[in-house]
Image 1 (cartoon, one colour):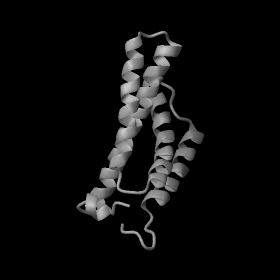
Image 2 (image 1 turned 180 degrees about the vertical axis):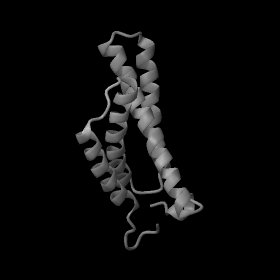
Image 3 (image 1 turned 90 degrees about the horizontal axis):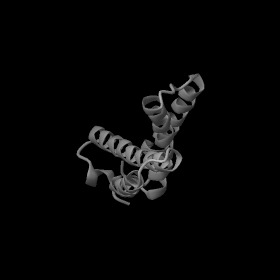
Image 4 (image 1 turned 60 degrees about the horizontal axis):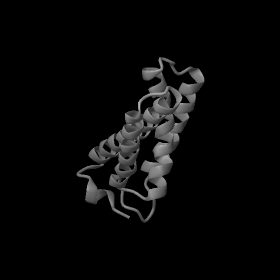
Amino acid sequence: MTRLESKCISKTRCIIYTILLFILAGIFEIGGGYLIWLWIRENKDLSFALLGAVTLFLYGIVPTFQPSHFHRIYATYGGIFVVMSLLWGWVFDRIPPDTYDIIGCSVILIGVGIIYYWPREGEES
């Protein structure tokens, strides 16, 4: 495992760095998937599919910069993906999240915060 100290100057900067990486990965995955969706479901040009494929490839690279174990990165990213998907729908499809979306996202963010940032015995934080 790569220790957080080796990638981060301070704990606060490390948290900001990791959150930005999660957001970037989310933009690439959701954006790439959305481009593929537009190509198939809305009969857009093949260029949408190609750009979507490149964007999805970039999504696969971004998590490798996270300073943690693979399983925790992807578990946390799964929760971030849920939140960002609802935000994506709000911004691009103009469907605002309802009360239950907001409650669910709050629970998810608490959960992924515990999974990713909770200090563990024997691991540097």
